[in-house]
Length: 121
Image (tube, rainbow, N blue to C red; front, side, top):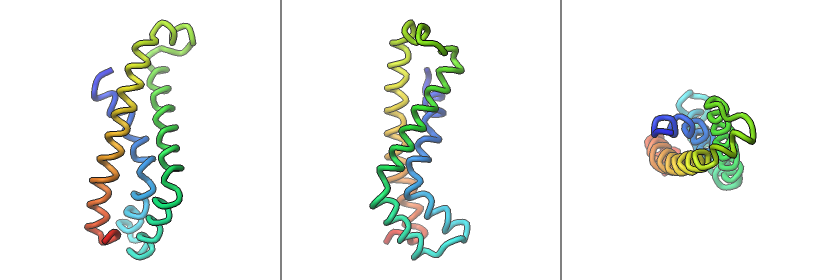
């Protein structure tokens, strides 16, 4: 598993986990909400539901990795036992890439876009 495959697997789950703060930004950018409503929505999502978003992102990461393994031809338990070290190493690499991607995307990219839109003061 190379870096390109790892980033490809982790990209959509990172966005799913970041939807707690990304969705108010998207609503403002599309003109569907006011900045005040988006700030209130992001406070509610991040304050009360952030762990649900993170859990959804983690589940999506697991499903994406499972889909990747199926495409690599690892479909049965016997094949998984034979490729155990490769599966564990790939899972750890994908999990680390997902956590780093989540932190960078949510706390750098979305944070600065939210400040630029004046959602977060």
